[in-house]
Amino acid sequence: MKVKAYESPSWEHPAVKAWASLGPTRLLPERVGTIQRTVFRLDGAGPGGGAVIAKQCRRKTAECERRIYQDFLMPSGISSVRYYGSVDDEDERFTWLFLEDAGDEEYSPSIPEHRRLGARWLGAMHVAAATIGARLSVPDRGPDIYLGHLREARAHISRNLSGRPLPRDHDAAVLDTVVSRCDFLEARWRHVESFCRRMPLTLVHGDFARQNVRVRRSPDGLVLLPFDWETAGWGVPAADLAGCATFAAQFPRLAHVLSGCADLGVYQSVIGNLWPELDIEDLQRLANLGSIFRVLASIQWDTWMLDRPAPNDFMGEFIDCIQMYVALLDAAIPAAELDRRAEH
Image 1 (cartoon, rainbow, N blue to C red):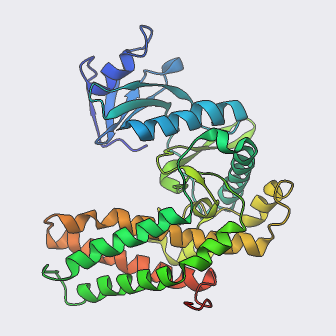
Image 2 (image 1 turned 135 degrees about the horizontal axis):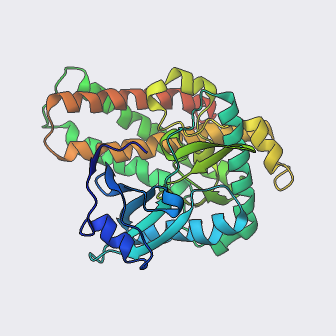
Image 3 (image 1 turned 90 degrees about the horizontal axis):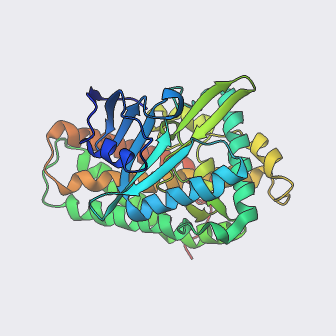
């Protein structure tokens, strides 16, 4: 993970203080790096002098991540960053998670070897989770969640279409277009649900993309290390399979949306014994639907900017991003065969 700034270690730093509360053998880090506002790198604090990632998050989210690391990934032998523990923050809304630093080599969908590695990892993870089933006790991540993203994003944008000055003449038209695409998809959502009912259910990472996946080199070959399970849950594996090589090449700035672009042929070879009924056409449609899911979640996430005053250059960047989301939707909707579906 990229560190924005370093500071001298102190037992009074909130991340260090939380780390120390896990036990008397915890080491004072050599330095503390800020990755995000609530994510820190504790250099030299881990086993063998390795770095520890300290992450403050909402308690409900932290509990879900803890269960996945401790109760699923570790016992199943699926490769993962090591989980060092968690501790409740002084603020009762939050919990600190402590994880192994995954390193700096990012997963890249443009590298075929990485796509094959991602496919094997996802296949093994999905099969192992489906075998365990509901015992995982994770949130629902079915199509209703993404319909909720659609409706929330559309409402958010619609509230801001009138009465707000926009920096460029075409900006209102871009926002109007994405609202129109949301209407189009909602009218066909029962077809999304019908297709998903035929697909298997499993644990879904939900944000399997290069910013949340690292590759580590070992004597036995490459090892995949996904992290950040904040959007994980139980559903069809569409979001994890989102994207394809064509989409990745066409929309390089949306790599955070297109997930891992996993090699679907390799993925099918891993899941085939458990789900022999899934052919490559099913998986391709599932992946294209996953691209739609991921775009809807990203639009909903990004619309926070509309609720606050923002300089015109930031607002322009937001509109440009929305325009790319629309272009990706326009590519993914026919690929998912939703353009062929009648509204009634």
